[in-house]
Image (tube, rainbow, N blue to C red; front, side, top):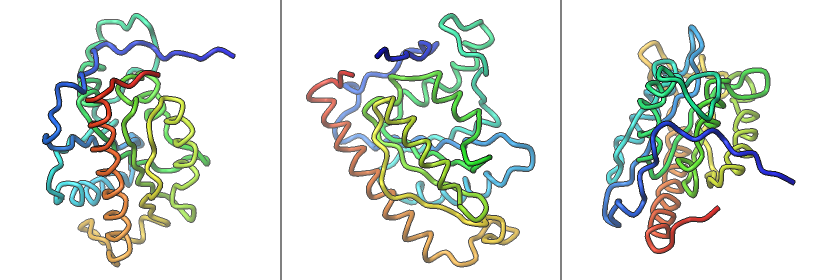
Length: 213
């Protein structure tokens, strides 16, 4: 059985060896929807508030509505595609861990998110990925289960606990405040605690022995 290799990114990955053991954990928060009228920015603001209030984190926000990767994959990206990737790839490469925000479209996750994933490989390897999902009655959980399979192929480690918002539009007021925050706040703490453990453990492991896939 052969393994399909993703196109090489336009920008080389940052070496994990350059990150000291005591450096802050670099967390990239990725908003995977670019849909017109999306509810994602409300969820993103909520997530970013929780991530930024934790000590020991450096946070990078990647919004695929603003920095959407080229839709056509290529081993030889055009100058325009390389320029677009150049705004995204270094952020992924520098990250020690990821929080991926996804809605659920037709029982799956958005196309721009899959494109972002497929353009990169080394940037995901041996790093933890946590999920925050939102949607209707399912809360986006079917999208998360599919993402776990995709990230496993890329040698990423997915965090077990998630945060999911079921019927998300009814859960927040007009200012973006959650109407009953106790449960989601507790879920976010558990998820970020696990992300921190995995992020530090994997970064320290790679400093001792480079990861080889």
